Every structure is written in structure tokens, then in C-alpha cells.
Length: 330
Image (cartoon, rainbow, N blue to C red; front, side, top):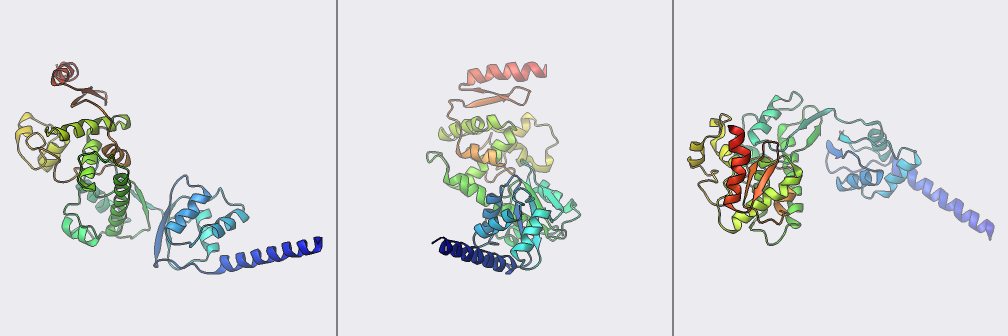
């Protein structure tokens, strides 16, 4: 009986060893070549294997996980962007991601940037191939497969790794697809009673929230104020949309006359949301737009320290303006 068990164990070990030998030396079938993928910072080995499956590099995660653990390298997987010129074997892929053979170029798109600032960053990057520099906004959207009419707000702010010489259109497409994914996830989890008709309207709101405050704790409250205003058909009256509407004519000083100059983005003269986003919202602003705080507030004013005073009535708001704005100006 013991001999039979030992033989079974040996046969099992031989089978596993044979499968592993076959697995590590058989080239993987990439979706296309060359092919790029990104491993996120702070990922565990299990998460890395799952990301490789999601990127359609691996068909299942367990064999590759076993390979990495067998080599004793479970804690040595390096995050970053990787560039594969041809179909690698799992062994080659393992060595690449544990050595950290990443593409060295990267570009960061910052929360709150508008599309003009984003294009400037791409145009100034020396490692980017500049295919879109002379293109119109509409042409760029067509090239990346976007169906929207305006590019503003469609790109997710993040750090993108890429191989030197990659087209700016390819980078824009990745940022666009990242925003589409984030927006779809946020929309699926939204409060169903919110006054949005489409995910795009939630994106517009998120962009306003992004520009109104840099404080993560205040974003749901800011969104809550604007939701309250939409529900009672009250103008949003938010300065960032007015500034966006002024475009390059804005000199850094918002004047009273600017608030009465009608543009599609002047939420002092027009009801409802502006026609497009006004900036790139980050994940926090997206979450605030679909999960606003439950509040009675209809107004807020900056305190001068980066935070805001929220008020439920105009009388209370005027007192806050006198306290935090007028006195400070004097």
C-alpha cells in the first residue's frame, strides 16, 4: 500500500514537473504584437497574475503564480509599464517583471487639468511621437475611437508609462479608455435618485467638483450642494464654469462683469449643467458626483484656508461671506 502511494506521489510529481516544463517554455499568445501592459504599484503576486489574465497575456493565473513562487520571487515583481515586441515564454515574462525591465518613459496627467493643458504636456514630452499636434480636437476623438463631441474631461488623470517613441494618440486612447472604465464603474454604483440622465452628466458634475475643491473630505458636500440646486431648478452659480467659458480671455482675476457675460458655461446666467466637463476629474470627484453627501446646504463660501463654509439659507450664507470674504478683502 505504501509503495503504491509512493508511486502515485512520484507520478504526480513527474506530471507536475512535465506540465511546468511545458508551460514555461511554450510561447504565450499575445492579443497583438508589439504589446504593452501595466502592472499597478502595490500589487501582490495574486493581483499581478490576475492583471496578466485581464490583459489577455495569460489564460489562467495559477501556473504563472506557481512558477514565481517556485523561483522564490513572489515579493520581487516590479510595477510599471512593459513592452513586449514578440510572444514571450512564461519564463521570459517572469524574468522581465521580476527584474523590472520596464519602459522608462512616463507622463502624468493631473486632476483638474483641461484638455488644452493635457495636449501641451504631450507636445512638450521628448519621448512621445507627436502625431496629434496638428490635429483638431474632432480628429483626435475620431482617431482614438471616441464618440463624444468634445474632448474635455474624457481622459483619466493618472501616470502613464510608455515605450519611447509611442504615439501621443496611443497615450490619449489609454487615458480615454481608463476614464470610460472608471465612469462606467461609478455610474453602476450611483444613487438611482440623482438628477442625472446619462453618465456624461455625472462626468460634468465630477469635473465641477474637481475644480471647486482640492479637499477630499469636502467633495461629497460640494456635490451635495449642486445636486440640491439642480433638484429645485436653481442656478449652480459656480465660478470654475464661468472661468472655463472665458477661455484664454481669463487673466486670473474673475470680475463681476464676467459673471454676467453669457456663455454656454456661465452657470450664473444659465440653468442646469454646462454642456461639457470643464476639466479632468479624478476618482474622488467621480465618486462624490455619484455619491453626494446628504445635506440641506445650498451655498458655500471659501474660508481662505482651502476649506469652505456651507449654509442652508441665503441669510446664513451672506453672513459667512461677510465673515470669510469681505473682512479678509478689507
